[in-house]
Image (cartoon, rainbow, N blue to C red):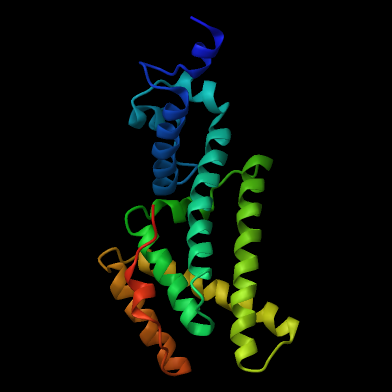
Amino acid sequence: MTSRARAKAGTKGVARADREDQIVEVATRAFGSSGFAATSVADIATQAGISKPLIYNYFGSKEGLYAVCVQHAAEALTAEIERTAASGTVGLARAVVTLDGMFRLLAPRPWIWHLVFDPTAPRDPQTQEALAGYEQRILAFGTEGVADLLRLAGNEDPTDTAAMRAVWENVFRTLVNWWLEHPEEPPEAMTERCVRLFSAVFGEIHVPDDLLAVPAER
């Protein structure tokens, strides 16, 4: 057997890249469902049907595996926000489209949201770097959307934009968290609720139906 063949080999005939993907998928769900502090490497190994030493061999440590899972989850969230940002909607309609896309993304796997916002997450540089990169990308899209909203009202003050972005970030997270606490609520119903709430405060909002009817590709 050549060294190249050995490098590609995994366990029980599974290629290493495929095995790593399997471990990350299982670990992402475990960390997101129970939190970093309450999840052990043994838990993940058992759920993945592999040995603890294999996880350490692939990822170095529990923190190393967690950092990869954070990157995996954060990339999914960011990609969805990038997709809805490219929809061409502006103002409150864009806010609704963004929330709708997030609800649809999280409906089958809510744990990726909990993973990214886990209060028990380690403070190691690798994890913090993964989170910082995600936050910077989200910040850019949030600032852009809020700036468009204020611009429609004739306001281009940068300090007002910064303040409103902070407001939007809290509204966005609160609505997603509320929805995740009510799993009986389907994504479509939650989107309709957001439209009603925003309309009650800001007036009627028109969102093209086609933008709310097509879930993101997974």
